[in-house]
Image (cartoon, rainbow, N blue to C red):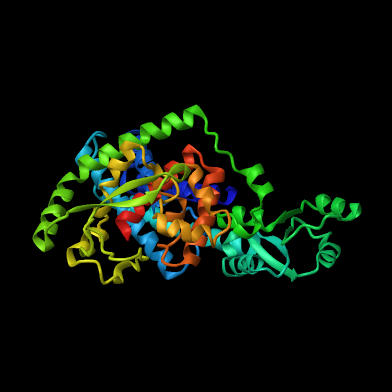
Length: 436
């Protein structure tokens, strides 16, 4: 988290430098004070909106500061959206009494260039200078995945110095290493006292794979979830304040979405009627909290093969995404625009699902997955969601392996859920809807 705050601080520096450059270049010395007093508050509000925009595009995620083409494209999109926000604030809201044209262009250009430069510097610092030595102990697939992440993403600030299957050797050889992280597949039951003291004296730490997954990958490894882990880490109790806030936000946002999206929903309904008639909507069985079955509402985007409006005749089939031959031409458009998901706001108002939570699965898939993925039933101890941690962190689940991966993200959310994570998921979902 400290590294993320350093990136935010870098953007703060970029804002102030670009702001001061505008004052120095665009105004006479005698008018500096007036220029600052009239521009400061509006531009600070603008900066806050830019930080929000950067967050929506994932630019405060350490994985996204690596200077590769997809991340640079993401940065460019965020800057473009930030410029549009500036135009909206100054020319449509008009609450600040100023309409800066050239100054706004200079500000966003200067901010973008300086922010990009600072991010490059931070990337170099994180990947080459501000690093922690890592000692991996074990040969499991989880250990190997962590190894690949550490090697391929140096901006995380981790440097692999050893990977061995022998815990005694790792502890003996690297006990004197400063500020190291020992990641064990299984922490030894007995570690010599002098080695433990040496590790603590050198500001190092010992963690297991499960802890490392949470810290660096934002998920929980299923292979390290045991009955004792569940008892110690999963809490179904939620504070009254969290429950009330979550319910109020659920109803408010779902009603807001229904109102704002109603013109698009009406157009989509007409288009579907013209394309292949009724039914327009269909209900699909899903598994909710405590395993209860409910009907999830959707705008139909596939061909009709069954009386209930579904595109299946015999058994449930995994959707294969955009290439699914069952999706109609209009269906592809409404899926692209996520209009087919709008009726689920009714499910939120009814209390079948929440705005944020593990995505509800079909009973046919749940019974299959529970027989393959350990502890999969834990997804149902809280209310499912329209969107969730797994949805913003991982691709669409098309296979058993994909479902296993998404379940690991669901476990992370179930363990760590709070109102701040919920708001973050909502904001990132908005970004995904408008950029995918």
